[in-house]
Image (cartoon, rainbow, N blue to C red; front, side):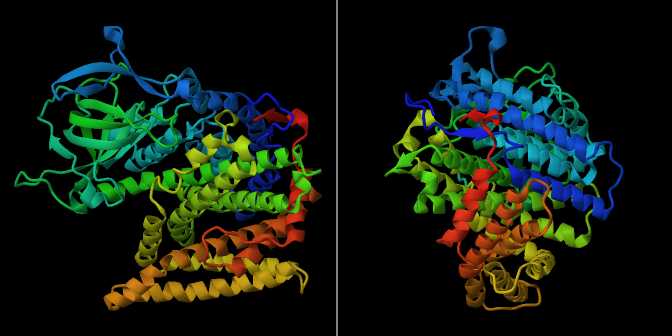
Length: 638
């Protein structure tokens, strides 16, 4: 906080050494890898720890300072008139539909430095350097992202789309033209070579119904086109919301032209296209793209987002015609998990600064950390922080298994349903947490210079980007129908095994023992509901429309029940094993697991509301969290 009285200014802990739950989580997955039987890899657990510790300090010092600088109003991206011919950007701004003034898209030096750091640290590359950590490459990468994102000044957003673009290129195969042109740049650790990627999806109609919302047309390029051998079409249309407008390339959906010369309607008319925003020399191109305006957004103002008119920009169709939606899903599944780790990162930052502030701020004769109502709020933050990271890292672990070819069929099915579940649940958690954080700081929380309003605003996009809650619930339903409920059943079976194992280790009569029994019953009930859904909507089920509507009306309740069952099992599993950090870490794990399971048992179908935690549990959570805070030498000013 930048106010004159800095007595109560919160500090942020070393992002690795100050986060016992993150350290224990990484340890758990490396231990699981050892039990499962590791494949060949160049690096091991010790190498990972060394790099994560070094990165954790850089995140709360250099990265945090750059992120705060990027978030200042004077650092927001803007359009500026080009001073010299060589400065001309790729964009043109419409003036009365007749004249166009050439402009530059300006981004701050802090934004550019964050680009360089992201490349140097391999925040995208680490996922694809599987020779280092094998199936745990994603766990390692997302651990770094978790420490980075809350401090990154929103540079996490371009990285999410770049990661998704790199995965899409990888799936195309080494012989594909797009792979050969883009992949090596997307995963480069050289700041001068490293590319970021945008995704141009949303058009004027907006919304998630891309089948009816996309009107951009792809017209075949004449043989021997002047833009080079890589392009085979040109795009004509209007992209209403293009994030990371400063990116080197983009993937976008557009409509094909049928044999009758008309646009092909519906999903079958959508193909995926690759666009190079800059020319072979790395200069921003001026042919085919007109930048109409930068978006004036509620939050994420550090991120350049623009309206683009496409007037014949060269592009390349990827794969078969009409497969665009299916192909872009590979990219979106990655960005959804980035959305989740960003939410988890923000919640951990909120838990960190509110606890540190509470240990300094006295009201009515007592420190906030000793006030019962404040203790409740602080305990909620810690529970949400652990829940969000636990859920996200489980999905990330499954992703790593899948990408490395080591996933079993049930694990692949679990990943398909867990990805939308994880995204929707963590997004709800972070909005609640950010709002409570703002209130917790009172008037200070409403002041821009504290940085807290920025957290609040930027968190609000997370339930919207890559699908709002209702759309993701329908995606969960589609996943159930596609595999006849296999993924959901596997997820519930995995949860039940973890809960039963935890129940055996919990003394009978304790709250945790009782709550585990209740959550286990929830899992059995959820299995029946999944079976009922599949039957009602499956090919063999001919349920009446009214009956299907009834199922859809109850879908969100089932979805949040699935989330709470899984998170309960993950927290119980975490608390039941021997943790390496400390006795306090184990005590905290027990208290969080008990509090979450009790909440899930009492309100299984609510969104993220934990209700009023038992005060003894809340006090135990805050006391253990406080004892695990990093000492001053390992802290940095927020």
